[in-house]
Image (tube, rainbow, N blue to C red; front, side, top):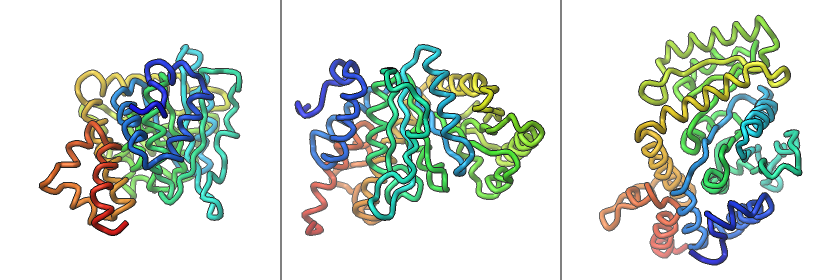
Length: 319
């Protein structure tokens, strides 16, 4: 591996937040370099964190819930990284809301790392830079929380990047019926009804969601029944239950080969997204060509596979 990037097992893990921030910035500025691809594949192969994805409509309380989860992780003595995916500015392309400014973390706590990233052209989904950041963060910290914009595509993209998807629903919003119509109930591993301090409205929303789940027959992994919990970030009620569901779900998929299969599938999805973003759907057909099975290679080396595939295809297209 090039000296441009620190060693994962020593320098990066021991370098603190400043070193990690520098690495993530370099990933964005040197995204097309071969050494970047090699570094990211090395990181992807050493994932150790529990990775949680929070999604749901704007205003549902994801940032407040993220704050509560950070506190729970730190109380348990675990290091935690948060990647907040913001909608993009039409002018600069940068993060529009700056989610990290809404998180009440202690700047002096080296056990917490928070970064905001723009969704760019992914309509609320995860950009290539966000996927690269997740690959690095999950091999450095004990817990990783990915908070998305939550406007449709992000729910599907999250499934390709995290181990456990939490869908947040706000009481009294009618979201549960809309999600049932849209089929989104097939995606979450846990459903959290936020603002549980609203009492009757929260209990009614939880009941509606449970009904929607029973109709969709949703279970993300064989043998896992999607739980519904009521959570209040203000009173912290239900936060321990949510953390317990997260821990149990991760243990469930890690007990056999489900987690390994899931991450291989995620790597292939990352490769496909990168190919589709640059070369369109026609590029995906070429990626499964007879000369070399790029999709199989992508299971263990998604970034180097794309780098190699793109290097072969660009000259043919005059790029």
